[in-house]
View 1 (spheres, rainbow, N blue to C red):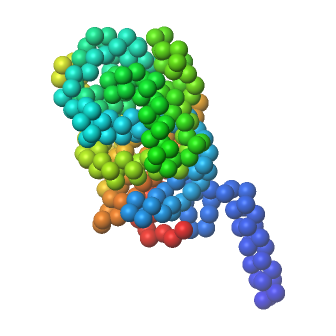
View 2: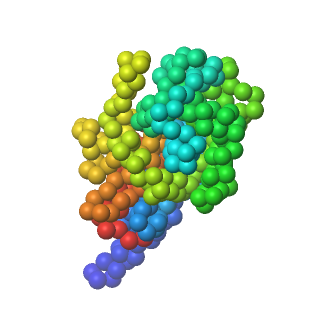
View 3: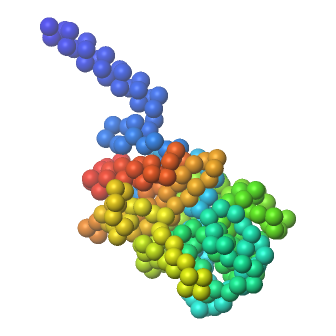
Length: 297
């Protein structure tokens, strides 16, 4: 009898080893993540608590706007721009595709209005208008994006091609010829970007945690695309969540960079490439639960 149990135990151990080898996202003590890539970081230590395909390049869509947010906040801090500056909407900005506010050429809005709608609602026309205002042209702004990427330690696998993360086809008929190619980013780099943004500009969380923003001039209100916010309520709410950014690309799926703080501990979770809008939040919940459970890598 003892010999039979011993053989059964050895067989079970072998099956576990084989299964883990085939499915690298299923690790003992770690959650199985249904996404193309995922990374979890402890913000205070910078330690990566979980890494699943974190170095894989993907089209991140709206996640790349985190860099646009960073450069706008940096410009304001350096005195190169002010929150109450009037920003002119160009023909290109007014015709960009994807999620947008239907801004019209010649309209003017403040940097603050456009920043909030970009951060909360992921408005592409607002992102382009801000990029042109800060950089002079979007091309110059993109150069700043890539320079900043290198400066803060992001890898060469991440390359910014525009201020929005959109593909060329989605940029509209008035896209400047010099704006070409697809932005690519890794989940690990997205985590580093979020870490730098929160550490250097923590006020960004006051913006990203808003459930709704408005543009009084147009009389419209936009709800936050982050369904995990503590203040929103509902099935996807996560206690302590106050940001940070969603993204969607027709080819690579749904993405989310989230952050939450509990008992003085802040985590950053990155999920790239889920099959649905809802699943990016479900998978982020798994990561955050793992991190707050006192996990060890």
